[in-house]
Amino acid sequence: MAYEYAAITAAHRRLYWSLPAGQLEKSVADHARLGHELIPEIAASATATLARAVAESALLAGRLEFFDLNHAGEAQANFVLALQAAHESSDALLGAAVLAHMAFIPAFSGEAIRAEEARERLRAARAFARRGDGNAEFTAWLDAVEAEVETRFGDTRAALSLIRHAENVYGTHDQNTTPSPEWMDWFSPTRLAGFKANTLITTGHGREALATLEQVLRELPPESVKQRSVYLADAAAACALEQRPEDACSYLEQALDATRKHWYATTVERVKTVRQTLRKWDSIPAVRALDERLYDWHTTVNSVSL
Image 1 (tube, helix red, strand yellow):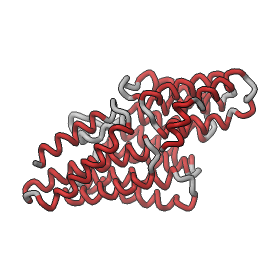
Image 2 (image 1 turned 90 degrees about the vertical axis):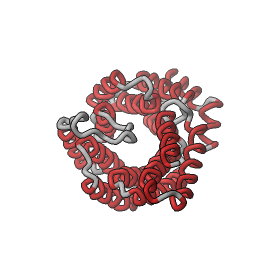
Image 3 (image 1 turned 180 degrees about the horizontal axis):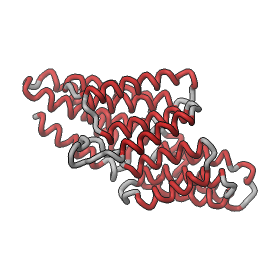
Image 4 (image 1 turned 135 degrees about the vertical axis):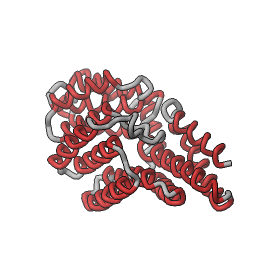
């Protein structure tokens, strides 16, 4: 039973990149709950295998709910379930991954008083990663997550230091010698560069951020549609910093085009944030055309339905 359950978990992991989140989320969340109910009923020899798969399923459900659908409350519940299952499987590294994802919720809340909550989650994640012998790639990812957290709470100096450390650590990574777990399919050197660009934008380095993002967009695999849409929105933010409103609008329209097939709430929120920075150019045709696209039926209905 445990191996059959784990096979479905692996299939969901692959489907994440090709199925719309609204269709996949319920299946993944139901699968996680089913597995959680089965853990006490299965033979002790298979508990670790089943619990590990449950933890991965609940983590994926939380990722879908938080990043794709903007359902932070449901995501938190699934992250807790994932952490409990990781405990049942004694998988410290999976526990570290869950804890790091949990840090995103207070970081994205916009509430400065939640900074310590996010940082505490990351301290716990690093402790679990050490316990689980996390490799260089995992360490670089934790650095990138912490950089995102510090960026959102205004400490960009710390964020840039973390990015530099991540780049140095990643340079020592050897996938053949110390491979990452199969479930860690959300990170790469290209995506680390995406984290870096986001921090550069926050520090006002638009030109450097745009150059980084242009390289990221060239290197990103075709199946990474959701990540591409985020980086397009970030490229728009960099253009706005450089006083290039027409180019910013072009990038934003491309980002919105990507969300038509794969809705991604994180992207739409970033598009709206960049749109706010274009207010002094409200009268130019490119911005007016962007508004027509941003507030069309598809985007508007999806935004208010989530």
